[in-house]
Amino acid sequence: MSTPTGIVYVLDDEPEMVKSLARLLRAKRFDVRGFVSVGDFLKAYGPEESACLVLDVAMPELDGLELQRRLSRQEVPLPIIFLTGHGDIPMSVRAIKAGATDFLTKPVDAAALVAAVRVALHAAETRRQTFAEAEMLKARLASLTPREREVMEHVVAGQLNKQIAADLGTGEQNIKLHRAHIMEKMGVESLADLVRAAERLGVRIPAK
Image (cartoon, rainbow, N blue to C red):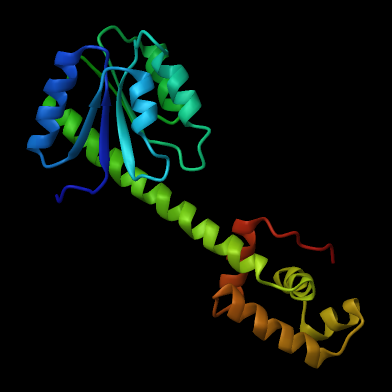
């Protein structure tokens, strides 16, 4: 399997652990950045990056689960792999429920860590692509005129051109023109694609 792109951040308050994990992951051709301080990590990390975090649960400055909560507030949450030398099942359940991609115990198995990092980086790329697609759809929706937006709401509700024209007090030919402009601006080729885009955007569908 090819090595996924992206940065692997390693955060542990034990310098030797950071060195060991970084050495292991670099040997597998990962781009690794190691830190022993939460503050230094937060200064270096950019939310726009495609990355994952290998995180020790018991950090002295900030509890690992609390750092996870803070990072989860970003538009594109950072995939986190937790490491602990004294974790218990409830802790791992809380971490996974909060979005962690894995929870490994120390001393960590090298193969398990590498596999977990691959999964996390693939998740990071998928999240970024999903976010980028959503932002593109929002921009396309914003390009519609108020009238086109109104017509779109009726179109995705399943109404025919003549029904929309009657509801909006205009001619059917005008609705046809608006529909064509909507399809072009939204970058879709079918009604089904338009409906899916509207659902992702949370476009209001008027009651019939």
